[in-house]
Length: 307
Image 1 (tube, rainbow, N blue to C red):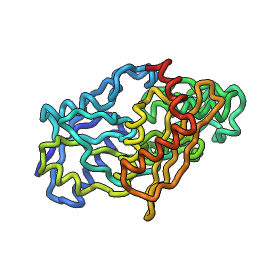
Image 2 (tube, one colour):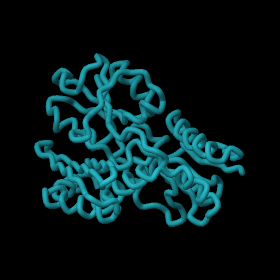
Image 3 (tube, rainbow, N blue to C red):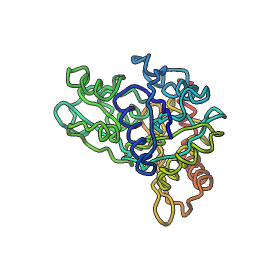
Image 4 (cartoon, rainbow, N blue to C red):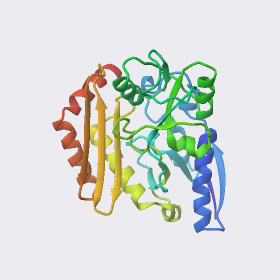
């Protein structure tokens, strides 16, 4: 069996793709996988903050189109970047075991976020991270920083910014040997799907779908699909500072859902346990609690600016 997988060309994207290929070879030792690098809109524009780019799916659209045109057989995406509305021809067929969903804080002086001096500059291109930083520390400056992990760390070490907030899973995957502070989910609720991978293929390629589903991790699937369903019900994307995290245990789902007001003075935070693993039921209950606490009104205020 030989298949072609599409991916971006960054070091992290290639590591993630090889992670999936290795898992497939554990199940099917005879499988051959060829990697095809595809440049995306997000790889071309490395300056504009993500929430100011009007299109959705800037890291995935070109790759999914290659699947639809049968130029590649499947793709590996970072789940947190993958839109909830997909082309009808493709679907997420597997979610390998998830890495850490947490954000990580790093600085040149190995300081914590709380210890960073007043007026320090923190780099991120995420509106969600910017909002949570400003909610915790109104005295800090937030500056846009784009590029792969290595580029962002280099910019920090060269003095463009004093600190960065990144995904812990990305640091783990590339083996970056740098001291960092793991930010608690209660304070920096991650975006839907952070730390997880989405393996995507054509719906009609049943033989390949059956092969790819062999590496699906059930708990990671339920967690990330619930997170994505919550985001879909709220109809939000990277242009609104929303964090959602789901942790599955034997009895049900622990759900955390957070946003911050546009003046950074108020935080709506929902933390609840739902004794069910039904994705739609759990999602609707979490969204209901979020609405009751005023979360929808905050999201609407952000939409008026960025959408």
